[in-house]
Image 1 (cartoon, rainbow, N blue to C red):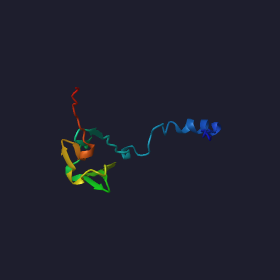
Image 2: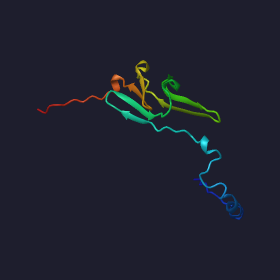
Image 3: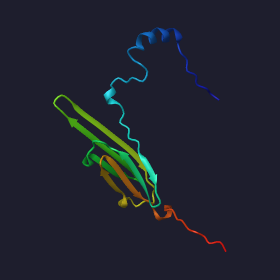
Image 4: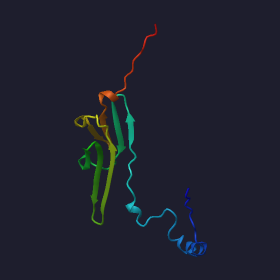
Length: 136
């Protein structure tokens, strides 16, 4: 078994950390405005379908692209804002595998009040069947 160990060069670490820690605190990034744009999606497993729901505040529905390619559902958008003194662009892309038995022509999407909801119908074999069995 091989174990990796972090080795610190204490002579240089202490010398340079005293100087640079004030300028580059832990967790700092070079361009804070260029941080990653993550959207946490909620995936609901309903009886007849799966729902993928996430917030896309400030993004118009025309900017959202949803496509299925080889049973991979990809949601993406690019949001641009231009002003006199600035240009701002944010983009997002996220993908999910879709069951091979899903009829992709029945996938629907709704964008309302900054919430994007994608409904993926379950195939008959995956739908939840509830049956009450009578005891004799």
